Image 1 (cartoon, one colour):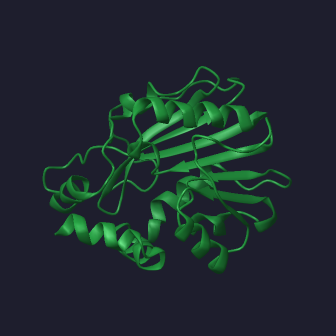
Image 2 (cartoon, one colour; image 1 turned 120 degrees about the vertical axis):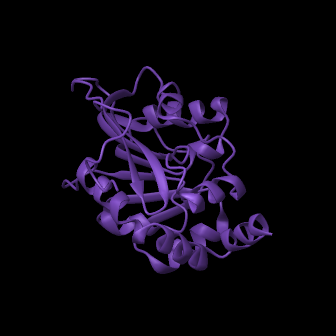
Length: 219
């Protein structure tokens, strides 16, 4: 019954976004991470891969933002409610020229994809980024606390069948994308892995001292 309800909610972008915002404190922790890791700079173009209803478009200048999603309903909703460019597109087949974006964001996509498809998405990301490109990946990880019963329940009934550990996501990265910084954090009831990536590999890798950190938004 709960699985059916979640599937129905996902067909109504506004309602789905409202419910997710309640469960995750209006995405406060995630928004802060995006601002910190992909700070707005004049002239930089941002691609939001699997942008959903477009909630994070407000963090970027409309003229610099492009959101793509395979779900026509999400793109229609985003186009009506937010500023920026929105297109229906399969993340595994990004229809952009090489080196056409400065930055890229992936939030909550890879845990819906098997390893082969997830690697295809990330390989495409490395292709469309410019040489000094930055990418930010934020993905669900298994709920850590046994007391977080709602978090465990949501993971059981939602359609993300490939929720991985931090190490599992790390092993999906292509050679072209270099890990600059990573950590896990809590957003509302959900636990996430964040990977901050660069294309040229000039910055040193910064790994957390322990499996869990509370640098930004942790609880």
